[in-house]
Each structure stands twice: as C-alpha cells, then as structure tokens.
Image 1: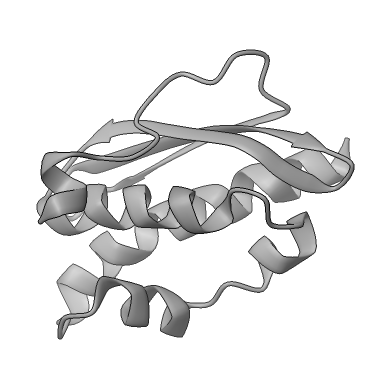
Image 2: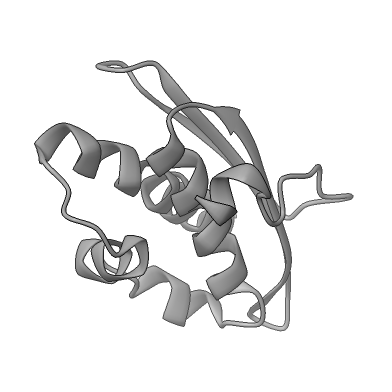
Length: 115
C-alpha cells in the first residue's frame, strides 16, 4: 500500500533513452515507462499511468529495484521476481496487473537495444 500511496519514481524523465507504454485491456490499467541508460546501466527511470493498487505499486517497486542495474540484469527479471516483490497471493487477473510494468520495461529496453 505504501508504494501505491507514495509511489517512487512516478515522474517524467528528462532526455530518456527509452520510452514504452502498455495497457491491460481487461481492466484498463495503463503504465508508461521511460529511462536513461548510460554505460549499459539504468541511471534514471520513471513511470506514469493509472490503474489499480497492484499495477501502480508494482511499477513503483520495479523502478526502485532497477535503478543502477545493468540492462542485462533488468531483462532477466521474471514473473516470479515480480510475484515475490509484490508479496501477496495473486489470481490470474491480478497477475496481469502486477506484470504490466515489467512487460512495459522489457519492451522499452528491447526497443532501445535495437537502435
């Protein structure tokens, strides 16, 4: 609840190297992410969007975790890592909410790598 009420990194990132957005059509949650990558590491990251407690809290926790990590480390974050980070039992619909930010982040980084 703390990450939902006081989200970390819910901000615009200046001069991002990557941006990405994704929505969950089944519930209407939307997450947009952007970040700055220098020397293969995420040095700044932010998100915005709207949605349920789980999707917004997961985005906040994920951005906190990723600061300072290498791109390769971030791309290795899995569904199980997110479930553990969220720390509560998630049904199928809520799992989609929790994974929205990870999918958005992986999509953004993958696009950056292709450039």
